Amino acid sequence: MRRGKQGLLWGMLLCGVMACGWAADRAPATAARSSTIAPPPPVAGVVLPDTESFSLAGPHGRTYPIWVALPARYAEHPNQRYPVLYVTDALYSFPLVRSLRNLVGQKGVNIEDFILVGLPPQEGLTSLQSRSRDYTPTVPNLSDPDNYGVPEYGDAATYRDFLADTVLPQIDTRYRTDSSRRAFAGHSYGGLFGAFVLLTRPAMFHTYILSSPSLWYDDHVIRKFEEAYARDHRVLAANVLLSVGSYETVKPGPRYFRHNDLLRDNNEFARRLRTRGYQGLKVSTSVVQGEDHFTVYPAVLTRALLATFPGTGPYVSG
Image 1 (cartoon, rainbow, N blue to C red):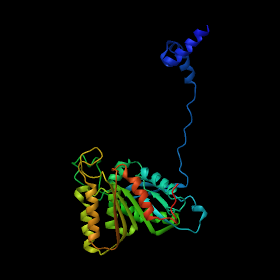
Image 2: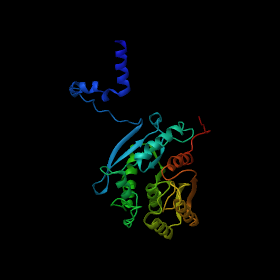
Image 3: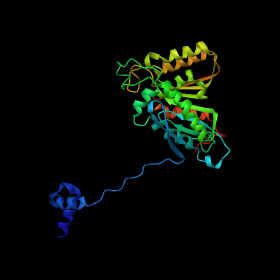
């Protein structure tokens, strides 16, 4: 009898309860019992500490959520004002930058405390739909399926003005900001948008962190904006940090690009800006070794935050 019980237990373990005839014979009763069990209640989503969210009405009936991550000690220093970093593609960049600020920053020792503002997509649109329209300055020839995959592009001027006239003033009203120390960070189309703002309403931000900007867009149309700005201006008071991954060029291999050479475009854009001799302009470039278009942004942001918002020091690591 003992051997029979052991055989049944081992059989259940070896063949799996649902695969055995014994379990199949009892399946109706099991199903009847399980049908009376109430489903579990909904589980609340994760909420990041020291973050807030509100929505602002934009042009053409559009509504945009705005995410804010305050320094952990914001409430402890009621008289302190903070620099502000605005990041595009907030679904990805907002939690990333918040984590970098909190970990690498070490409470202001390595990176100065700053207010982080995330710019998510328009309500009701996917990230791809919203960013393709809001971050691009012109309407391209959509016949190229390798570069263009959504129906709407070219509304960067509208989104720029929404930020300048609505978002930035709201942030300055709601929080203790140092409006003279606004920084912008964007990657890919977000970097293209930053370059467009730099050449059309440069005073919006003091620092422009442009990671792998899509300067190839619409047959390098950004050059026309740069040429137009150069015709009428001799001053461009901004700190521009241009970065790209070493794989973001055209070569054989899975991590390289097939068509668009971001490494070449970055160098050419930096050269254009430098040769103009703009008063007040600082341009730095970097190539992050071993990184491609998908992997480079965390490294770019870490380096840019250390350079843009240096802490009280001396630097600590571990």
